[in-house]
Length: 552
Image 1 (tube, one colour):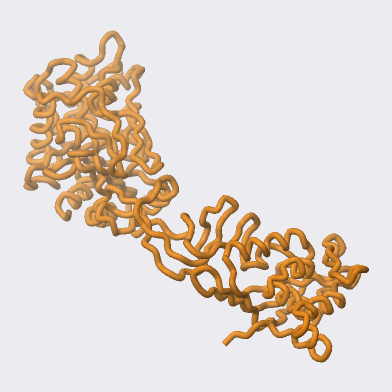
Image 2 (image 1 turned 90 degrees about the vertical axis):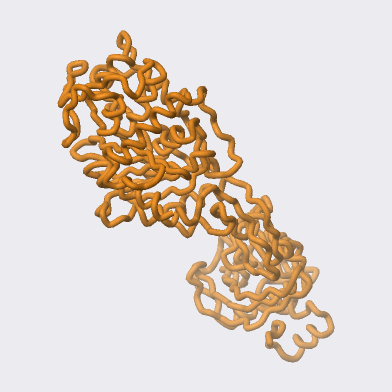
């Protein structure tokens, strides 16, 4: 059992303690800090902080002064305790704040022991002690220490800073007891099940932190205990819990089970540790179900702004249907190469020339030359090549999205003022066209859901609307074409045989390597994946997408 501080003094001093209570403080203070002419302690503390001795007080002298300080503090003689410090005014106010903030009932100190020269305060001797405080809600015990300094006038004093009250307590911080303040306890950012902590997923730790910092939690019940608060009264840290509360939560749209699959999928051994990112959306409402990534350059699932390659042919086809009046059966001759604006374009290896190809057939085998010919002929007018941009904005909702919680995403880009060869390159997702897996998953979701639903990670978040809903005619054409890609086209090696799946692959050139893309949907979700350095969409991103569609 801990005991109140014992001064270790005999004879007259002991008698003064019994009779007068604060007598010991006055005797010790007179020995160490000086006494004014009227017999009260000198309010200056006896030590001028600007004239400190570089020689630490002896252990005996430091303990004697520390015990006098602690005795006055325990008796709530706060001005007396403060006068034993080298900053009496500051110390007195801090000791009152300690008393009031904790709703202090009793305070005792034990095991007051010298610890030699202080490693923090030069020229000081450290004295350690244990604290037992009866505060609002319960009993709080902790260990602490003070540094005792020596003035050049021979007087000693407790060197004051907020850590005298509690170790590590910073300037502008104070202590409170009772109902724990907001911010003192943890706030959990959880999946849609209301319980799975997003921080357990490596891809979502930074996102969870951002959401926690920018979103008000719901539910929860404050517990009781002791906490550190800042100058505005907001919780900084919980030090002691007397009664547990209910942790407040921020519920997201993430599907915990699917997120686990996504975390594994981007680390598929077939990717050979290449950076990968994937996003899965509920195409019915735009809710983000999973988001995972690898690589050292940030979250490429929502920020990996890259040329999307042939996955852009989804939007190119929609523009040809909506703005040029073409159908899935319109001619789209597939040649080995084509020149547009003096730039030579060719097909990926394995794409066979087919002069009689339709737009649907060209989409299935991902013939670049077909889309460059039709796009350049039907969608570029007198040098104006903004039709693809307009389709992406008006039908597919391209713009600055806010998915919620302060989580930043990188916007896709299809410039309106493209020139020269980029006027043709944009139709196959090259040139200056850039996108993210988030945007391409949304493009697939727009096709399957027959309308754009802006992706969100917080339920109830405002969703930006597209100026125009995709027409039933265009949606039907694209659904049929994407289904052919999955069953007999470029995505068939990975997605063939999966029921209700539509897809589009993409391989984009970037510097000295290619990036692999694949976006797809099934009866529940739309998915997109990007693998940097992937040899082709189907042989890189295809593995990621298949795992999400089959393991969920």
